[in-house]
Image (cartoon, protein in one colour):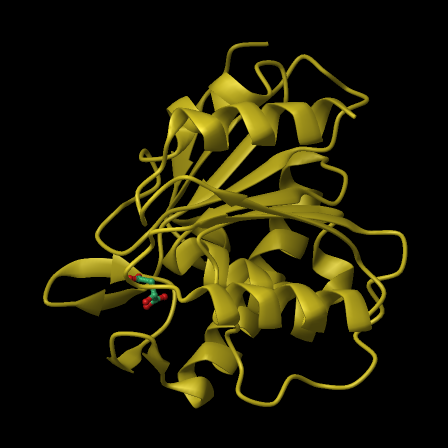
Length: 209
Ligand code: MLT
């Protein structure tokens, strides 16, 4: 089936592309600041060509740029908004699963999208089957206890020369996710904040395993 849809229903403007791989979990694509629901479709197609793709647009605008939650400064998050937006995104995922007949998705998030995916893992672990987090940092100063991530696989891809996410922040997030029971693979790539071919290869290998 080649049907593609862009919808405003379910609370988020989003793009949905059905997949031909019924056995593979769908991918939930979460863009970075200033991106939209089209941004990561090529990445999704490159890392898992036959999976269904569900790609919402973040509902918060920062100087006209879509994001998934408000921030007070670079790397300083409005946690009240973050918690509310993570809840809205979890409800969107549940609605989309019913609407499109989907299994729990694996999130593939970049930058701000990776940060909301990390928040989903910690606050709404039932929403995701796993995640690929590209250039993520800890979304919450104090993550909740016992988020129930046992059996969920997470690939965290950080950049050794990332000027936005310090190495300690990526390591802290990996430790938080492990403490909640996730099976975390953390790869520190020779990269800055931007997406590289190494990210594509690592994500593809992770999703094929
Ligand atoms: C964020 O605000 O989520 C992070 O600083 C990444 C970014 O969007 O620049």
